[in-house]
Length: 96
Image (cartoon, rainbow, N blue to C red; front, side, top):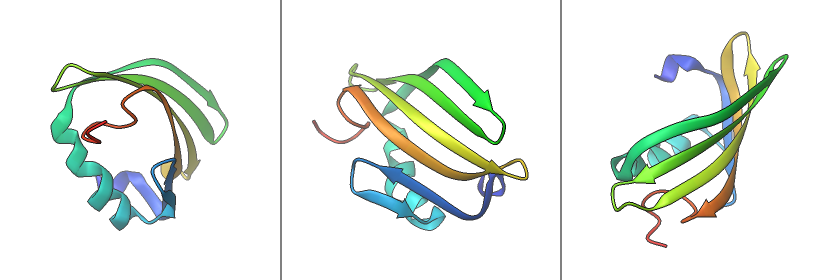
C-alpha cells in the first residue's frame, strides 16, 4: 500500500495530527482498522489533482462515524490527506 503515497506525504486531522509523515500516519492510524467493520463512500468529488471523499464507517462495536477527507495528488500518488471528523465517535478505536 505504501506505493500509493507520494514522497513527502503528510496527514492532518483534528486528533492532533499536523502534517505528520507517512511513517507516523501508519503507526497512529493503521492500527485502528481493527475496529472497522465496514466503510461506505457516499460521495467522491474530483477536481484536477484534488478530491473530497465523504465516507461512513461502521465500527466493530456498532457505532457510526462519518468523516470527510481532502486529498491532493502528485503524479497519480497521494501527496496529502486532511481528515475532518463528522458526527460519531471521532475515529474508530478512540473509545469515545
